[in-house]
Length: 468
Image (cartoon, rainbow, N blue to C red; front, side, top):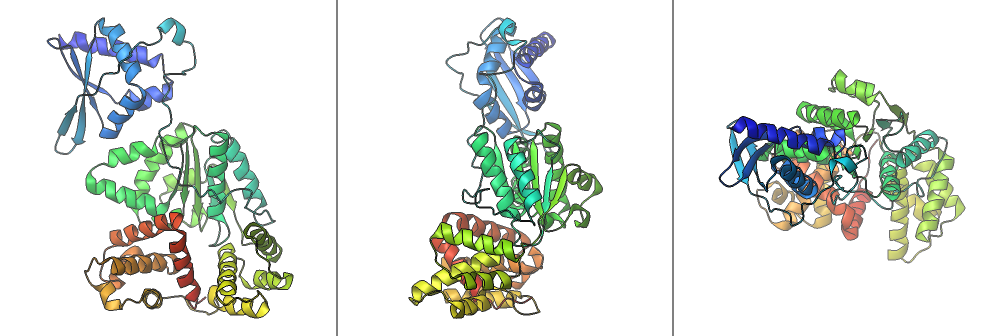
């Protein structure tokens, strides 16, 4: 008897297939497994891969499914789900969804040969994690970035429809990579507000993946990223020593690429120099367009500084602008740091911005020595700033002030040293690498929303005697 009910479910799938795109069918309906049908209460039990999968079906396809069930079984059918919660131990959880009030649906004669409309999966309410201030309007064009900027704008207006997929941007720190890829996302959302656009740092992606493994929700994690239309990942060089993260990203990348979704990647080095990344992923990184962002020359630095002054209403003499542009080592980040420092000093000391003040700020904001910062240097500056003794940072105490200093120290150590997360954790209280990754993610998220906290971090950074 179950075989006949299985045949009715198969017929139901055919009805659904005629009312969605092939991509939607393969993603959301092929993985469903027929479990059983109870005639006594007219209940159909279906097995689905994860809780996220179940929620997605209920949010976007429930009316279509009930309509197809009614047409196939010729009766009102109750629908239950069986979610696989642990494949290893074969653990499942049954879910009884709420039946929609209205299950009327289109007939096959009106839907079979049309593009899907009302029954398409609407985009979920997704925060794209984009900085609205990092746009193409504020990304100043010059000789060093003309090609990447032009291609980036084209991609933003035609995502997934050009040969520039994936779009791989690389260049040294401070050349504007994050600004460019963020601008692509912002423009894409302006042109296609319905698209699921997501910017994520490689570090945050790794934290999310590690957490998914710990919670045994890896399937949910992968399914989420496979629903993105435009995926933007920054600083992927940080995955070089994380083979499991790379393997997982490979499956996400492959899925999105085959469906024609746009992928944008940024790194401080070209694909060929990404040590530890397998050839199967390197070849995919290289199959679209690889574009280099060079450090801006002096003229572009001048243009960037003038544009920032206009936006912020600052008045800085031309000779000071020229001096900063020549001294900031071609780093946009250093340029911004110097300007922020000038603003702070001029306000606090009620002084005008002149060459003497610029020289004073430059010494604190731009790398001047020949050796790099150490974790001890960073700890000393952060502890001094917050008035906390280092022994408290190294302790197991969860006091708010100590946790803040610990997290900020780990974030700055990750940013300014070349040490792996595991080594940083050992030097800051004997923590493991996951604690470092979590701390960095926490600081990054707060920097996006808390201006006063961002000013504090800038102040600490400006206090560094940065070493080349």
